[in-house]
Amino acid sequence: MSILLTRYEVTKDSGFVAATDFNRRSRLQHVDRVYKAELTNVIQLTSMEKLFHIRIVDNVERERFTFLPGQFVMLEVPGYGEVPISISGSPTNKGYLELCIRKAGTVTSVLHQARRGARVGIRGPFGTSFPLEAMKGHNILLIAGGLGLAPLRSPIFHVCENRADYKDVHILYGARDPSQLLFDYQYEQWNRIDDVELHIIVEKPDDKWTGEVGLITKLLDNIPIAPDDTFAIVCGPPVMFKFVCAQLGRMGVPMHRMFVSLERRMHCGMGKCCRCNIGSTYTCVDGPVFDFWTVMNLKEAI
Image (cartoon, rainbow, N blue to C red; front, side):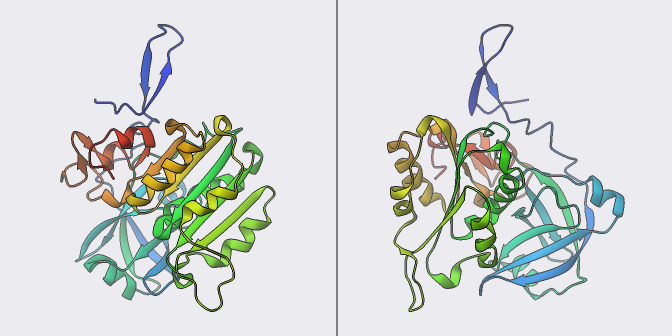
């Protein structure tokens, strides 16, 4: 079994440096198991994105299904195929899964036409997760651009539900224009949580916009950061990682404390189709969550 060299720790017995794999394979469920599920609610977020509430039909299977923030599932539409989708909901919600889906292809277009009661299949969960246990007792920056708020929403839920475990939390979110902002009905709720600050910026404001204007890196200019006491999670277009993580680096945050999701490279979820590979690394098996040091050492990862 290969191990991706992402972070390192010194073992107590030998003193040698060993790779840490975030327990990804020990948490991987049987890849061929399909959970029968149904749509229980569909929420229009923007002109291109919808939030789907998906409930596993069997009561026992629904109760047993667990995931960690950052993982994804394979969502099957019978007769059309399946697609990898990051889980956007809270790990503590046993009633249904929340999947934010952009209309971008055949399968997702069919899903956007579906209504409550439609049957689908779920496989997973797959992939690595954000190391939120290691982040306990530290400040956290949760940074998303565009559709990146979908995978970031799960760690936001986790941090808010376990607020006492973390120090200051800043949520930074940027979109092209106000019409593309996701989950706007939750902004006030996040802002009301003690020591959680939400910062939003758009590139192209409309006549009603009164907030910040510019690129998401601008938001970092006004946030005090203790580099050795801060972790960052960054989700969004891969090109965004370079600029955001570069600025975090200039502010003193170590690369191994920045985590990104390469969820856009997901395909089959099992490393069989080889469409997600970056050199010898299979993103859907060894990822999608990586620390930024690893990403910068994977040629053409971003």
